[in-house]
Length: 356
Image (cartoon, rainbow, N blue to C red; front, side, top):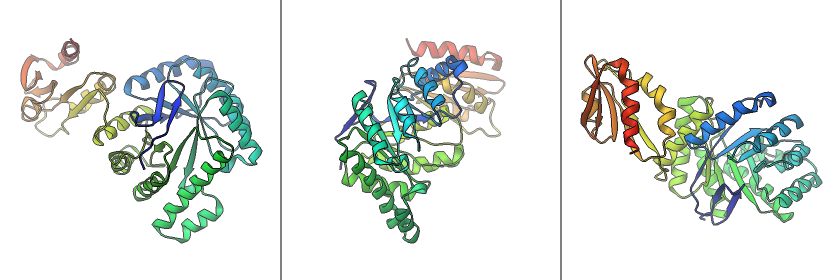
């Protein structure tokens, strides 16, 4: 069924209820409490790339308090990822941390879960239930192991439903649900099944998806069909790579699903023996800057005159090699011919004109 519920995260992002699908990533290193301004700077960069929500692992009280301080320094909603120790969730709720990711199944006694729920209710902070295929309750893990794909999918959904019921029994429904597996068919099956039964907002992702290429392929194969079906309200593209790569991949996945947001469409040729311009180096240098622009525009980085103004004639702005020179073009029309060492400066000038 379509998701009719919505969850507000710190009055900044609304997940579900037909609102735009938000993009998340997860901080990949321990927070350094002595140099939080570096984290602030990097979070600002992630925001400009299109990141809406940022999650942090919270392994101990020190991490909870450091995250709490950071949450007061940045406008982006920060999320605490809690396992096992309910006191970490309680401490995080003393700060302007926007959401708590928790799994009641590994928190322990029901009174501990209730303490978290009561305080989250008091603070108006939503909770995300996170269920992973590799850490199911024993009875469901056995069912999944002995059965086929269908039984495995049902076991994962049942694990999520148990957690939902545990919160609902305590009168708490300010929830986002995620169920993750490391393979595409299971990811598709569990989210389709859950969404047919419930209208809680869904966080989508493929867990342990792998390095850059494998991870992007697996996430795209799983998330694009779901999003195209109207399933999923927030996504994280898990990669063994940088946070910035995860955010950029998330933007491209939303675009492939036909629900992309305003911003640059960056296209570039793969390069071949005809190339008179190093498209790889130029694209790598400019990608973050271009993805940070909020203007709808197609930017083409091409290697030669074959793939330049010709195949790139649809581009609002393009750059390519032409013998020993570099040319900059708009909608297929050459506007500048320059030497390679002038390429960055000239491209910057033409990019600025694009905003006029």
